[in-house]
Amino acid sequence: MRIIVADNYEAMSKIAADNIQEVITEKNDAILGLATGSTPIGTYEELIKRYEEGKIDFSKIRTINLDEYIGLHPNHNQSYRYFMNEKLFNHININKENTYVPNGSAENIDEEAKNYDKIIENLGGIDIQILGIGNNGHIAFNEPDKALNVGTHVTSLAQNTIEANSRFFESLDDVPKKAVTMGIGQILKAKKILLLANGKNKAEAIKGILSGKITTDNPATMLQLHSDVTLIIDKEISDEIINCN
Ligand code: GLP
Image (cartoon, rainbow, N blue to C red; front, side):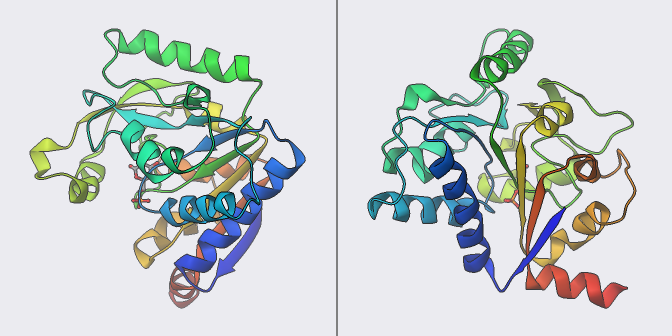
């Protein structure tokens, strides 16, 4: 695992964008696995800037997102499809038909989940997967549990995730309680993984990734099984980890 400590959020975002740009430069029709949440917003801003400067061409790029809330229409301003359009796709020369986000308002959501794995397979697999991490170690919406899922599936959100994500909604009650998410096995199939984390509330979860132990209580610890993971954390997290040891 490659560990990079960035001075701050801005530096973290630039390093992440460098890694993505490198993949696109090597393969102009790369499959990017994308994440939502506040963490990758700076990375997307950096990618937009580089597109505007003529440094990145997204015309042949395909993207596949990790997850979506169940019950939110793609036009809902808190849906992850809306987020991706607003934060990235509307500002670059990507063909939206080449961007995939699970449809959280699909009539048959289990079918939607199954098809999603087929889409990834048909695309030929993910070249680089961007990940954020929840305070409890969740990646995508794979929450701590007795067992973790391999493929894309329907899941219930942990209470602390509902509380953490309520900052984006008008009230706690408005936060969807279920989501459709790529499974851990699917995420581990990506050729490269880039995990971004900033802020000391993520330190505990990150410690798990560096612990040499795997536990379903911290789903992100599974990333230790992958041979090409780059972890980009900010100084706040590394200071917190060092101070606790
Ligand atoms: C959500 C997403 C995750 C994301 C996490 C952390 O629950 N499903 O993909 O990593 O939140 O979010 P943030 O980056 O806002 O801390």
